Each structure stands twice: as structure tokens, then as C-alpha cells.
Image 1: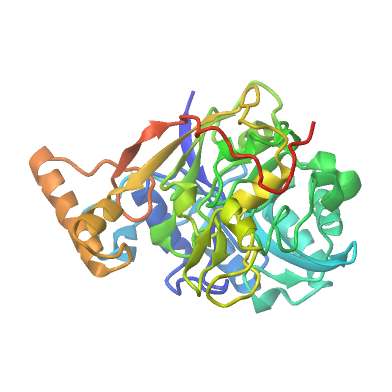
Image 2: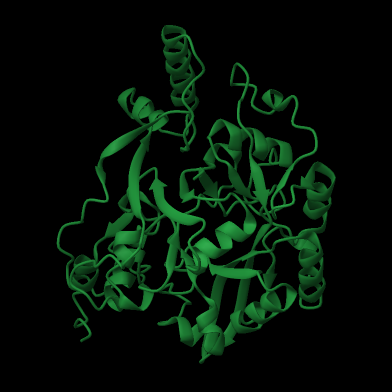
Length: 408
């Protein structure tokens, strides 16, 4: 069986706060460099990006798309020397930001949408275009209820599907503390059964999600949500079987004995992610749930209520003291990008150029000594990843939420 790595949530240069270098060819180059076999296209709802998809890519007959002209990709990454081997295929994907009122609250939910062909994409875009302006942002912001969105998705193709994105992020997610819901059914109503996969997000890992039985039937995926080529693969999914749209669809649906999702890899602990703990980023305040409770939920710097983070929110909804891995759920591996190790050992921040120079210097030395091209793997920025010393090792016993009893 073929094994392949897929990063199924990315963006184009037409989304806010993304690199202007993001073109289809740039993504293909970085995808090859990271060893990614399948990439989401990102942002197929944006008319200019969709035109670029149609111009640069061609269908391969299996629901994926490949470059019409794969030559010269090395020019897309001038800091990398040598030929970039491999081939990256694309899967039609976009993200929708839904902001609407329900149950007396303003809801803000991000959903990923996947389509098997361009005709389905165009039908979907035509429906969405009646709701809002798709050209305003690669990730369109629409006053569209999540129930109505999934209805549109399912109406476009039998194998079109929706995946709630970064489900615990406080401000824009299904279960977010600021504007989310307390269950799948509360958000999607009668369509709750059509939700069969969810994205963990950078601030949680699968094991944290295994503390809530509501998610036992859900296939968890982890993606980069990359806003630049360099960030591709910082989280990705491992599949085994036929590399096709239908293969991934059935693997996530949990049907058949063909393609299976066999694991995830992550390049950092959720504890280092932006939204894991409670606090205020601008105030430099980060607190665990017990400290938040002790301070009455108030920031010690500005005196305003803190943002409840992912860890706190999971503790609120969890109905288990310890994680219980669902039957058939894949393992996950935490990794550390070599760039971060080199940057921190040299006393530099990971985003500074010194870390990048050190990475390329180390990579060049490795290649010269080994007499071969660099090993390719997915990561935060470079070609090399080192295991963090733990492979799906259970966390310490989960703390009970300081304010809530565990549901029985």
C-alpha cells in the first residue's frame, strides 16, 4: 500500500495576513521540499485564485490536480540549492468564516470545504456568491449559518464534505470559548451526522480531544493552516492506500477497507501554541485554568476579563478524567523543527534570519558529508525534523476543571 502525507488546510495570497509570494507554483515547490504528496488548494472560492488553479493545474483523473508545467520549481525557493525531487498533488479546498446569530449569541465558526471537481466548485461558488462578496477575501466572511453552509456543500456533489476547522480556537471555531457551541448537534442541527471529521488546530492534539466522548466517532485531522510556503507541513496527516480524493474521503468517513488515515505529525507541543492557555497576548499574560479561577477571570495587567484558552475549554466539556483513545484512532508524533533548535541554541528567535542561515548551513554540511540530497520531511521551515522524544505518550493525568464537575 502507498503511504503519503497530506496537508489539507492552507491559504492563498488572497487571504488576509498571508504571504504575497503564495502562488500555485510556490506552494507546489514548498510541498515538494517538505515531502508532502497532497496539498489543499486553499481559497477556491476566490475568483482570481480559482482562475489560477484552472490555469496552472490539470485534473489527474483521481480527483486531484497536478501542475501543467512542473519544470523550474527551484526558482520559487531561491534560498534552497539543488533540485527539488518528488511531486505534489492538490485537493480542492477552501475555508469559510461564518458569523451569525443563534441562541442569543453571535457565533463565529470556521469550516473547511472539500470538493472533488471544478464543476462542483463552481456550483458551490455560485450559491455562496448570492450570500456575500467572494472576491473580498480568500477566506470569505459571510453571514451564513453553519447549518445552511453544510446544506449547500452536500447539494453540490455526493462526495463533497465539510470539516470544522481548528475546533477549539477561542474566537472562530465550533467549540470556541468566545463564540462557539457546546455540541456538534447544537451547531449543525439535523446535519450533525454529516460531520465525520474535525481539525484539531495547533493548540490541541488528538489526545486532548480523547477526553470528551462526543468526539469518539470523529476522525481527527491536523493541518498547517499555512499562510506561507515555509509553514506548510507543520502539522500534517499520514495516509496509507490509494492516493485519490475518494480515498481520502472514505478514510475520513471510516468506510471501506481501502485508504486509511494512519497517523498525524505535529512540529510542536500544543502548550507552545498561541491559544492553549488563558490570558492576554498583548499583556504578556498566560495562566492555567486554576490560576484564572483564583484571579476571578481577570487579567492582572489590564484588569479586563481574560480570554479562555483551548485547555480550559476542553476541561469544561470533557467527561473523562483521562484520555481514552477511540478504537481505530491513529497515533500521532510530536516533532521539533531543526530551525527552532538551531535558532534557540544560538540565542535567536525562530523567525529571525540567523536561524534560517544556520539551517541552510547545517543542511549543506549534511549533504556534503553524505554525498546525497537532503532527507525530506514536513516541518516548520526546513527539510529536517527531530523527534521530540515522545510518540503518543499519554499526558499526565488530566486535571479536573476547577469550576466544573466531570459529567457522568
